[in-house]
Length: 308
Image (cartoon, rainbow, N blue to C red; front, side, top):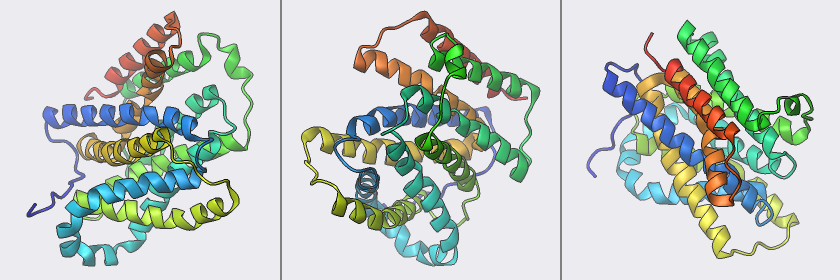
């Protein structure tokens, strides 16, 4: 590998960029939709900070050998912009998933689905405030339609469930994770020029792991010894290679092609994919509400991502 490709976070110039960006955003969302299942399944097997650290160590180890040439050329860039990369690493790497894994111990599945849908709203509002991104009428209609589909799915068609939801400290942790992901999405758009995508991920993955290390050591000093079963090892490998490396790369490419606002709108499809996975993997029944909610989400995404 002679040269590391440099990511360009410019607005799309053609329909092919838009289509590619939508596909990248969908791919990232599909991979991330398994994160909740894996996180909840591993919650009792490994402490949350240690689980988060493990996934980023796996991702860092997988990408580092390919990033060495770029890092050797671009190290001055990272020294100059170290504050930016530290903030990105704390928000998008260290805190984001750690908060999810901590909250998974006390938060119901309904609340987790509901809180995750706040991230696109945070992104749209922040993009409007800080970047002046327009919110067109068709986009607003599409967002409202997709949000209605999400609420239909998580309420199972009984909206009285939403009125009876109660929130606790774990819910607030997940809300902070949603806000953190929105900030990360916008910061990716403002990535300083002068580094390759492999270098970018290697540095942020590595910094995020370093931030998590002392918290993991503190956990391991208090928790029972970890039994590394095949299921736990497989889950960590999936989180490191899939939910970390592959999904974050796809998400960065989506932001480069269609911007953070439209990428965030596509993130609304996460509950739809999570529901399908629950049907296929956990044997949960397939009901009318899944078809209706899925149709509203997909229809809303089509409206919201149309060119004005």
